[in-house]
Image (cartoon, rainbow over all chains, first blue to last red; front, side):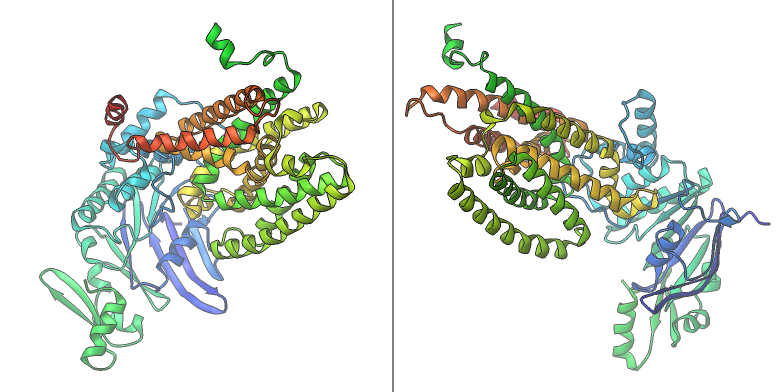
Length: 271
Length: 300
């Protein structure tokens, strides 16, 4: 029927009687870089959890290759926003990447040269080879993101989901992660779907935007979606889109100027 | 050889209780240390301590009704582990409050059981045995049960090792990969309860976490990877236990003559001493490669 890697059809989710997402439809194709953009609390994480199979949907369907999503799908790789580990956790970077292959399995395995080389290759691909023998809990946020991308990639996923990978990163780490991801999408044909509250660092590489606000989505290219009419319809209030110095700012103006500034900060789209 | 004779007092290797102590001590030390590495990694040291307090109640209850205290440690520890899992140990706040409330009750009950036990029994030193252990008076008939329990707990932890590590990296990530995170957590908690019960036999219920957490915490300061951490922790646990048994045996010849010092004193002191020694050198926590740590070592 289609070459869609991932398709959501009219997906709705209610949590504790509250409608968190409604009527979400979107498609992701192989090799495509999609930004899941929206303010904090808009439903981005819920949407990612649906695709991961961690959150059941109330309505609609989640299709992988045109078929309902199986309970466990090895074709989806996931990079969580934050690792829940302490600096003394006995996991070196190479252990973490190796867990990407078989961390879900019971029992033990013996070390092998082939595995070690595979792990090294993955670390090289994401630019993390340098700290392969460091403990992952001692790395900076940006370094941990690279390691977790290698962890996800070693399972050879066709779709890579990342939850706010750019949050709390300095500018150079941010650019480093974005370029690694863009290269993976272009060279390896891996579909990348990444959530972010600020779309600007992603503008050069995004093929499509899924803009989430108030539990609904608008889907299309950046030029199609980031328009005052589209976003105003989504937010349910008047929104201005300001382009300045090559950056895009989405500004809501509910009542008066002060309120507009406050709202823009709430939306997290001004930095 | 003369020096050796001074270190190892006569009769050490010929003593039956020493054989049992060494055999049980070794298996228990390995199990506790390996379980301990995952306990510390998962941030469940407090759960381990809680299980130890509740095991105290079980041990004293078993003594009161005339059972071997190991079965009391085991039954109460496993029951408490199941209860902690039921009330949602995943939620940090729930687990702190619930364990805190239950602990007071458990130790209060232990006080009652020990008091009643000493009233109705002529056995002296029962309280001491339960609270602080006594590896030289292990009933030979319980040895197979102790060793089988230890191997079961150790086997469970090893079988779950990778899944536990993935879960500690990110529970969501593990769940998305199809890991039954909650069931794995429950199974680990059960293995932890068994390890605590076993340590209680060796060094007493109150001190049992020393054998669980001490070697693991020390190993985590000097190693980086999971396999090495488990191996080093096991080595530290076994060394402390053996040395503790040897020193306790020797102490019969120390003043006051004819009264040995408790094994648990030596084991715990050695474990804590080992941990403190790691502070004399820079920990391998810095992201620097190993050569630096070696320099720090040779500088000592």
